[in-house]
Image (cartoon, rainbow, N blue to C red; front, side, top):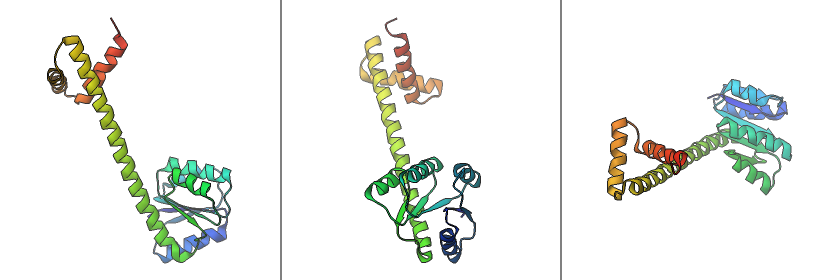
Length: 192
């Protein structure tokens, strides 16, 4: 497992690194300088990112949260102090573990595992949500296409659905794609 540590303090980063080494994790890269961090993290392509901030201010948090959203990797963040707004912003940004005053080398491994598990659970939920949205959009397109066919051909709903299904089978496309094409064509053609 490739792990990136982002910390402007080499001493604090060493605590995390030692905890990872004690847990048997050796593929660790430390980034002390945050300038250009997005490109360097992208080049490294870590499996997990551990970010350590002493007293994060708003600009730091916004920068790191933007990074967290873009990376799509488990991110655990260690801070010395926090407030409700900081925690909410971290959760909204997809930070998998937000640890206040918990930087001890013995805690690194369990926090790392928590971050990975929460990231996987969040990713699974996001995938399910995307699939549900897609299915809903497809259902809506099918209903609209059926309504158009019923109106223009003077047929009932089962006949309209059968026509959609036959067109999909004949063209080797999904019925949702055929329905979407019918709805799009109707929008473009208007009352012609």
